[in-house]
Image (cartoon, rainbow, N blue to C red):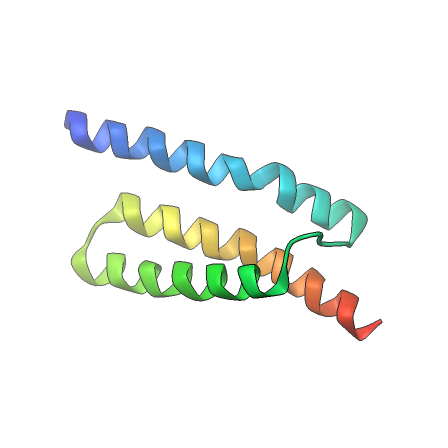
Length: 85
């Protein structure tokens, strides 16, 4: 693995891990304090970037955006469930 890939991998791990406490708290409390518009934009952007990174074959960028989309989708699901109540 070359130096650039290692830097990218470390950045990916740090960025994805920054979402873990919020997502865990959302799962635990079943409440999401995040703004709905922010979550919608974030899920959409991460999903589009996941598709793009797959198409260009960048696995670090793909993993980062897939995990970001997944974690923000959990927050979105909880937020939508809150609105139904």
